Image (tube, rainbow over all chains, first blue to last red; front, side):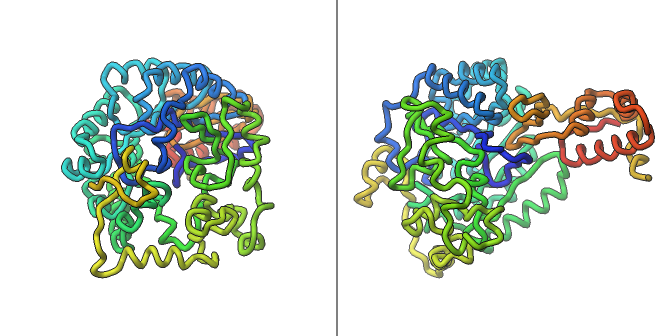
Amino acid sequence: MPKDGSVVRLDGQGKPLWLVLELTYECPLKCPWCSNPVDYARRKGEELTTDEWKRVLREGRELGALQLGFTGGEPLLRDDIEELVADATALGYYTNLITSGVGLSEARLVKLKEAGLKQIQLSLQSSERELTDRLVGARVHDLKLDVARRIKAHGFPMVLNVPVFRHNIDQVADILELAADLGVDYLEFANLQYYNWALLNRDELMPTRSQIEAAEHAVQQMRERVGDRMTIYFVIPDYYEGRPKACMNGWGAIHLTIGPDGAAMPCQEARAIEGLDFPTVREKSLDWLWNESPTFRKFRGDEWMREPCRSCDDKETDFGGCRCQAFLLTGDAANTDPACSRSPHHHLIGDAVERAHAPGRTVVPLVMRTAGNARLQRSGEGDHA
Amino acid sequence: MNESNRLPAEDRFSLNPMYLFRWEPTQDAHVLLYPEGIVKLNRTAADIIEHCDGRSGAAIVAALQARYPGDDDTVATGVYKFLEVFRAKGWIRRQA
């Protein structure tokens, strides 16, 4: 999955270089920062079949896609993942599996290796069993460490992805040590981006500035110690940067996500924008969805921009930031991302940061990602951790 | 140039095993694919990486000199410079 810190040293020339397949929204974990839609449970039973996914793979390569991410939910809940990986390998993709580790048995690891899988990106939430298990709502910490060792033993690049937020950011130094012990090749500290479930829980999850600085310091010290044996990504969250992220390298520029039901999206969060239509691969060809669909054309390039983006020198590099964040915080996806200090809505970010720092802040329980909570979202109720 | 002296000709170079190097018709170029990354290579870079298969720096230089006859010194200097850049980027590995 493309992330802050991803490297793309080529112009997409209008091609969807990065194809992400969300095979399912189902997941055994209940992470309260999940990037899946808060109403994911409504889409159960609409998942594409194996043959439909194979057609997506074929059409993606014809459009020039090179990197392929299998994600979810938990993609290992699909029993056809090995078959899809083999198909993708034969087509020439660089195949990535993004997983919680749950369901990654020894037998499946062997099959995935045989199928040509190139890398497995494993998530880990904490260096402590108790905290990991509480945060994700399942007893999986020990299993994740076991999976990490077996991924390494099978000769896959060991890519560990750690979502970072208030509850675990003070463990960054410990997590760095753990990663070094595990022989991790790429360690990605993914400061949460606040969409969907993470946005619901934003006031609880957002770390303070001093927490971020301490974590960054720990990362720097480890970089000096391990040199190029471990590549460590740590990107300052946009809430604290004053600059918006160059989200997805621009809308409809190089990224194409297909949801479990076949919906084509410019990113995994795009369904958060109300009023956009997301036709599926069941209705249209991938070529049409990428090149012709009004949704992909809507924010492609810079014609859609308003001030302050329109006359801004940075529009070529940050593309006005994130459309989803603009919609979620200002109500209009065509506005400048409020993470930008030049946005007239930047105070919304300042307010959220201020709440994170408020002395005597009232701590409320995290809203866990469960089917029950997905149904209850509108009434503001739900199961709590 | 002293830079070429920093890379002994006997050192062996190989592609980072996590990387995939191949011709990509839709880009009309060689590409490097790796976790979280895509790099499109120009012809010179691709020529050099193609030869990073465990052979020595001297052997890579010789192969490139054979492919681009003419100024052997310029080719040698260029190859060593590129090898150092690629190694620093993590694309290739060096074994003494």
